[in-house]
Length: 324
Image 1: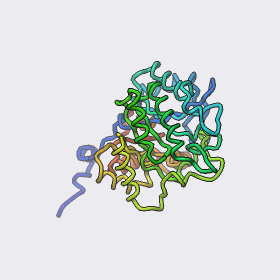
Image 2: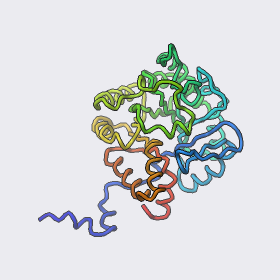
Image 3: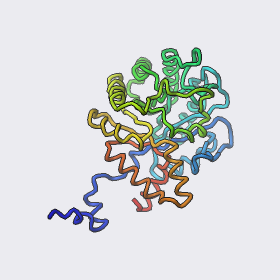
Image 4: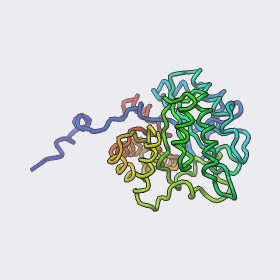
């Protein structure tokens, strides 16, 4: 009789034969940067997560670096918004300032900049409106300006999250033509119009003032063929990393993509995933560390290379304390 339990007998044996190791270098930590001064404000729907003004970043950056967390994904909250989201492509905008500041403070951080307009528009949609609908091709022009401004500021990776058709090729061309051929693009290729985003919209003040984003984000009621087609097209047009967002509800999509592509795959463990775990743990309904580790391993089994997670700091602490 084959005895599978022989290799489960104790923790040392289980560690020996484990297929997956959790390495903090494969994690990205999101940061919310708010325009203003003396701001460190906890996000009510995301316990343990904060909005920071640039002048309050130092302690957070020092803690992250000491934990070995060096990969940052930046989101900006400007003071002023308008219909065309002009602060998003302002060379002296909040994210552009934050990139420059972090790179000067500690150049060892890898900075990934989110390219979208929802945090910057007065209507909360991800592009330029025309008759209450987002004009895809007009939005591309602005996305190119945003990406270029981030590259000029010193971003290491550009991450377009807007979900406009054709934006990867457009941004790649803009970057290449302006001397930034070596900056990778991490494409939010497979981004669903999900119900898991609520807390993020609190964090970034990015909820749409009317309607929803279902005309440009993906429909989760469709099969996986669309996701594969979009990812392959983004790779063809210059994407260096493919992202799936949200993470845990789309393991089937990740797995199918892994069978089709060799490009690195990132998964974004979004705000709703984080807040559900936090709320349950705070109520004593589950063990936060154990469920986060289980979730990470499920993503690794599905084929994920890079994990964007609000739990990154916790994971780093658990690794340092020898608990993982």
